[in-house]
Image (tube, rainbow, N blue to C red; front, side, top):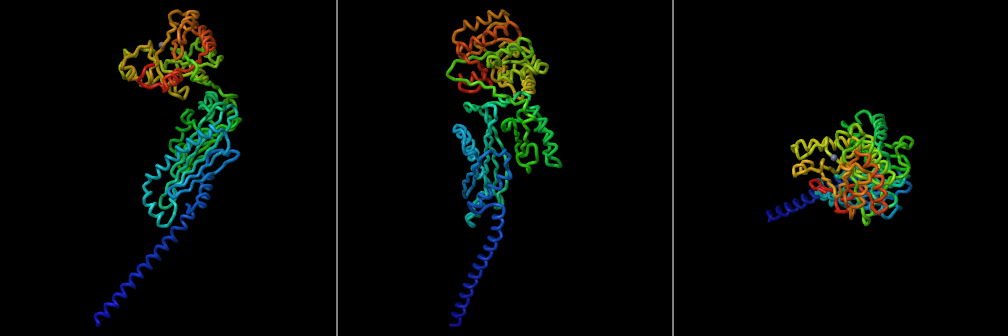
Length: 483
Ligand code: ZN
């Protein structure tokens, strides 16, 4: 009997012990909850309302985009990630489709990042325990600006936060901008709304601004390399009635903690490089087109005359330049580029490339690309071997689309404007053809003055070589192929 009583007492004790353990665990959990809860409330968010307030606050702190008239915030609150987007509620429907597609791409990329985030699984468990949303946030800020000269710039800034220790931690902020023509929302290049020397002009202002306003360790170590007047440094901007704001992604010009850096260049400063109206050509894929090409420039009197003629008729051509001539004749290169002509590579010194080693060929091509890019800010996308002379080694070593021709005017042989013009006039089915000429001869310039208006009157659109290939083959010119 006694033994039995003892057993009962022991059982009662163990039940008491279990209760004690449970109470202790509950108390401990509670205090952990109390410890974590204020942190979430303070820095992150615990529900939809808190997320909205959090997103508003962060948008205010991170946005680098100049404000537009009316802006609307939308919130997509979720347990795994939450997304807030700000945009102008009303404008062109086509533009809205374009903008929304970019937004979808950014969202998709972010959701993918969240799913691969190392804290995700642990976070998921904690979320279930405390019924908290994950602290993964995507902020998208967008705006559209009228340039005032026939175009619009659209800017999208994306700032990402990933959960670390139950808090949203800012990872990265990037901006992309696009220039679209008012008339048809076609993509346009900066030089269509700005004169070619806008880069030098903007860079000199930005360099001074950055060095005056970002001192004492706020700049990145290689800040100056992002401030040179090159297109790749100045390709993110918005323009509104003459004023321009340039953007530099997080961690480029300034230390990453500074976020995206924006510099507003005043209208008074930019006015002389802003075009009064955009230089535009609209290509109709259903109408016939030809590509005039001129070799052996730049810098000859005949070429100046050819450029003047192209400008007069709002036409373009492709110029295959020799690298060793580019430096001393920068202005012609600039003019050709600024009126929308395509600039191609015609080797450094007009060597017959088939007589050179692969290494020598590469050097001829690279040196020339570099010389041209130093003037236009853009590397040539096509090349033409001198004398049209090539073999497999040339094509492989050049590593650029090789452009030949379908109609040779023999302008170098006849040196006679009338004969050159007749070659074009008598050719059958010019649609889709590349026409070979040389910017060396006055007779060719004279012929051009007849050919351009004649072609336009016949209904031909004058396009660049790359445009021609794009429209006729349905794809951009490819390295390793001849056309
Ligand atoms: Zn040549």
